Image (cartoon, rainbow, N blue to C red; front, side, top):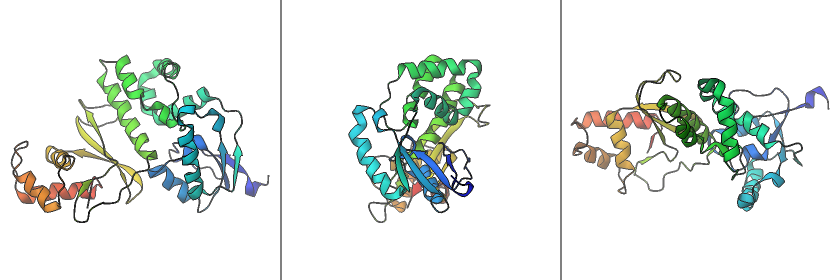
Length: 278
């Protein structure tokens, strides 16, 4: 293959690393059915790169095989690879070791010498039940909290990293369903830090993470008491317009009283952060 058409593997999460080759080799276990940040990354790369999609269908668990096939067809419609081929030499454990390091770099650093043992124990105990490699780590936060129940900083650190990685691949529908109503971004995830986290360099508090369709990234915002309450009100069964939400907040006894103008500011902050959609 000539230098101009040389190919390189594209690994996920990308973490800002984009190979220079014209042709990028991607795998079904990384891209089938993805949305949010990862799909946007791939669509942006399509403008200057060509894709070869490698499939590992024989390694997909039977329990999700039919779903995988349907998602593969949908993915091919927008991914449009120049070639699809069967992948070779798939080592599940080796691949998962790499994914772990890319999803949990700070957690791995914090675990130090224990990182390899913790990672390997998780891989031994957990059965693969998804077609995406990254999904295999969805139980890791709970697993880690069980192993180190007294180390809250470690558990919260892993939760922080996992939430950002999880949002990155989810196919969220961010469209409104009823005109005039406001709603919480469906990608919203909350992480609570029970104490200042030295690794994250974040203070104790409640943090919101969402996929922002404005800039196609996972965004983070520290929530104050009032912002958190507005989110809580919107997550109840009732539906609100902006005006109805502010009125409900004004009579809410769950938080100290503030005026309508202050509630308006809190609402605007959440809209500006893409946490509330209008």
